[in-house]
Length: 411
Ligand code: NAD
Image (cartoon, rainbow, N blue to C red; front, side, top):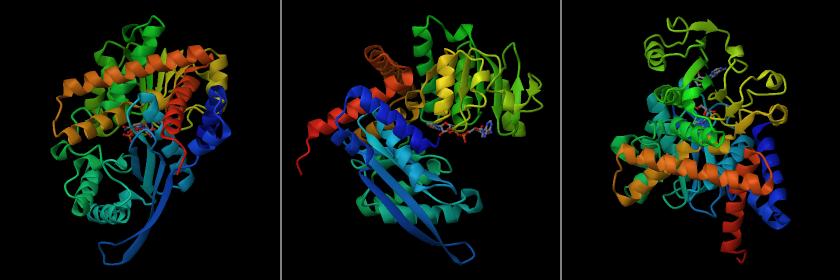
């Protein structure tokens, strides 16, 4: 089942549990606005080339819409739609005053030079600048984009609207980016996991972890777990996988990856087959790479007792069912990886206030938001007798439904 079908299914189940009437259910599902623009740029050799850019603005009942912009060859409107909707529920779960959006350009970023990427980003911004804004829609980096992309959007947008650092988040710190933003998603994953484990009377220090993906989210999560005394027994990325039943020295592994570009040949661990990472013996499995990795084929073989969904949509609905029958507790993505958007919100707040926070304050506030959201989710799990995924969906959908109803229907 693709991301859109799975998101719609979870939404409909939450709407049923909440007893939403069909008018509001329909209104919550349909995006507020879908934007499609053609971006034509001169390539470095002087030839002209066109790319299609999308922005789906899903819902703004709780505040400006928020979500990433990705540069990827397979950016398609259906997927962007699903991801925009997910952002609406995610920002509501975290209780930050935003709605949801997502966008992208269908291109292969590695095939474009830096100046071509800059021209493409500026043309895309020229086409959508009237439809985004500090109080309207605030983009952020996503797959294939980064802080430099946000700097170009900020610069181009500011030509039309005056200096507006809060129009994007995930900016370089020199242009008003927040301290702690780089680590925020991985750090949020660890705070979320600590709240879950405390509920089960457990602590990171006593448990073993297997982590799929050693990029931004996976490496920060691994580093923080290691610092807090947890034992990371297996790690994989696109280049391979390593294991050590006594715990991997994550700082040494990071240095090895930095020096060689790969995980293999690390002297502090044994090589293993990447396919075995997900079914490796551990207490907590943290998928931090791709969607759909836990599916009907491998769900029965998972040995972890807890799964923390740091990646977006790593668990297929069929796997969800199999794992839940096995008694595996799953911390869902719309909550577990909300640390990034939460610190994006802190960045926007700092830009609007014109006052920068120190990193300790960012991390303390992040912990507060992640812990509070966990207890809010648990409250709904109790009152609706449902699992954590449905607890998170009912929490998010109910907050957006309430805001929509309070604002009223009259034109
Ligand atoms: P990233 O590109 O920095 O890292 C991705 C990692 O996955 C890399 O280490 C890569 O080698 C690894 N990988 C790719 N294919 C793999 C495979 N077949 N087997 C094992 N590892 C593989 O990306 P990221 O920013 O760390 O994002 C990871 C996931 O978290 C994605 O699903 C993303 O949508 C989600 N997410 C990220 C953020 C964020 O702030 N970065 C926020 C929310 C959700």
